[in-house]
Image 1 (cartoon, rainbow, N blue to C red):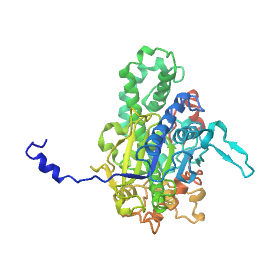
Image 2: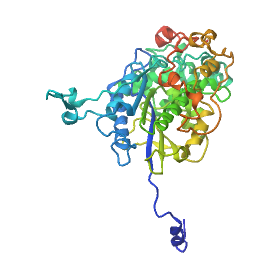
Image 3: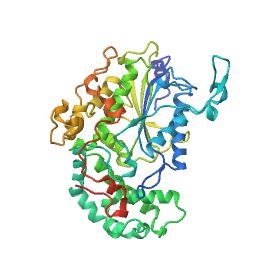
Image 4: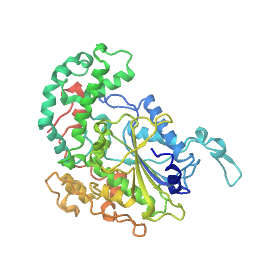
Length: 475
């Protein structure tokens, strides 16, 4: 704390004015809202989940569209479709969640703004009090993910599935499988309508957590509920956190985190599009995805160095946000040297009482990175071209087939990330260039041509959950 004698001198050193920040673009990656249990597919978004995701969308509207410091040039009332790029897998939970978020972001505008006069003088009022229709891009990758208990079930990446399955033979997994057997046996009376004694193990840690998590939210009664103390429920969740994080990320085998690697390329591509268009194209990007994508990205971006909380399964409606901003005048659009990126995270539904918090990426100290530093950090693990994806995943069918003109994929599990350091220059549409030229195919279009990848796990069998036997099958 400054002494009284030094305080006047210190005040003289402060700038007379502090440059105001202007947000130029936004990338929001959100988990879906509350849903039914995966034990009984098909899952569906609940009314609670709809409310959660709508609430998050409303908060983003109040802070980035109608707030005191909105995104530069954003349309405040009637949505301008060119300013939003929204995407989600065609899924009973993720797709409706995207719709709910967008309804909060751009709600009905009423009869005054939601009407038009035709050339013949007829007044036409939009239905549903001026309800606004916003297109949502369909992502093929991730389709049906909320019906499967297997984290890699929708990745279509052969080497990622192999890598995740390797966890089940690791010493760490075997130690937890054995040390937690008594614990899972003790809670069997609470789950024995769905899981039998052979299934009540750490092998099914996520499925058991998901089943009981949904039950504690929605069921008025649970068999032998006295066994589910706060301490027991925390243990169930903590074990599921460990189980799923180890399926989503492994530092020595980065292909396991392919979901986070392709997400990184999508984020770079989207923000770069905002830059190269001088802020006119899609300053708001929204994508809905599953918890495994969060966990794999957290590992790749070294957010786990901030503490053990970062290995956990994100709550429903959690968001991670990337703000593209500047502290110079926003018009004309700033040079890349004047652009910065800030990462914000919020676990669970966002609202006025609980808002996103900035955190440092890539193990650095600063909460804001220059655009060049952000690009360099993301490029270190992003997988942004079709050829890189095929090579990293070891896929050799469909568009990854050699006759399709692609390099023969490697059989190894290593990742091929896009290249070197440096920023993204607007005149040449970005140094990212070849690195993420096809990120729209891999990401915004959802790896749309890569659905023919090698499958090591039967999704049909897994989708039936414990009712058919083992909840998760490994190779």
